[in-house]
Length: 225
Image 1 (cartoon, rainbow, N blue to C red):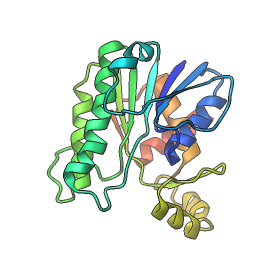
Image 2 (cartoon, rainbow, N blue to C red):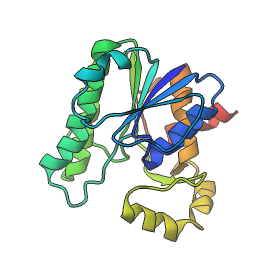
Image 3 (tube, helix red, strand yellow):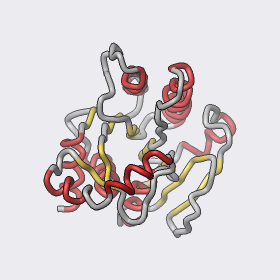
Image 4 (cartoon, rainbow, N blue to C red):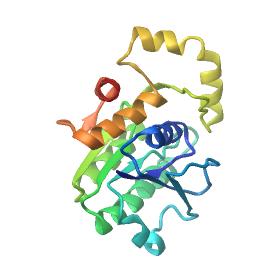
């Protein structure tokens, strides 16, 4: 399996990258991002790309992959709807549109968020924008498209969020998150579990195109069984 990974320096992306590099059936992981991950591994190939809204110059390099894991996400805090749309909808569709054109046989998995509104009618701006992004992705001619909607995530294996507010939150809740995940396994995910679930869905598919928290947990646990 050859994996294309966007957002490998983010909290979720770091977890996905770790699981991909450890998976026996993954032969190559190509990251695309504005900055390198700082990691070295025989399976890892990195592509630093400055303009995340434009891929024409490197489109030919993106055609050889079996799956794309799109893990780029930003908080809506302090952003206007126009700015958040540019960073969420526009950026995602720029990458996905190029990939669907050069390799429609690819599987595309998008990390959205719990609460995303598929009807695009929520009073919360970020829920509408996330829902609109999901809907647009489902219209692209990929072999299969799946949306992951995680909520609370426990970072494992030394992984940290790049968002200051999230780092503070995870620092304060670190002693509680393992207990919460044990008590509420379908409500609190881990970076490790999300990566395992993505690989499992790539291998076996899913009846549902939208995977909520419980679906992700089940897929991840199934991958470990």
